Image (cartoon, rainbow, N blue to C red; front, side, top):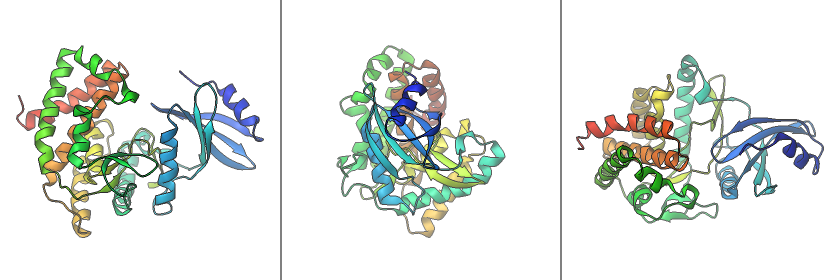
Length: 312
């Protein structure tokens, strides 16, 4: 349900003198408004899951200034069950809204950002997969983390996705094909590769100014695991973003990794495993939302991967 801007205005005005409150973005889990207070521009976000904001806070503590992650200045309870977080304002436009020439110009900086994410310490001392703001990751191995979407109990945040997906025979069949292929390919994933993964670098979560990344926001979906995941994620969604050249992403990921001594063993198999997980996760999310249009689009993108792997 959309958040009433007047409620946001009243919520802020009750705590401080503010001006120029306006909505600047909305995603699946939060809605953002900008405002001015004491001649400084800020962002306030409202969402149902305060842990997402806590992960943003933790990411800024760990990674700024090596990465342009805005600091969370305040968070708490808002109204109607919403949590809120106030953050520093970051200049820039979303890279996924850039024109093809502009995105091509920004691609080297985006790849630099992937290098920086790979270079920072993982946000959890041990474990793989989704991590909490307390620094705990959920799974003992990276293959377990990748397969958890299929094998573990349903995430309460996406409650009902399995039932909806099973009501669509074609989608359910393709999901099972992809899950089977993923189970086969995770055997190529290394045990000891543990890096921070953003895992949601589009959808307005990376900003740029004049071709340079200026902010990396929204770490709620962040994982711990194989650093190739973010590159694979960008490649999977590249058909929707002309200028996000998959050949450049992959060749540069390999070259930069080799230069820094990164583990690149089983490169193709690991990339495929990460892309399959990206697709399965998208199918689960769109089934949760009952969004048949985007579910079908994900399937169309997934099918060539399955066909090239020879699954039946």
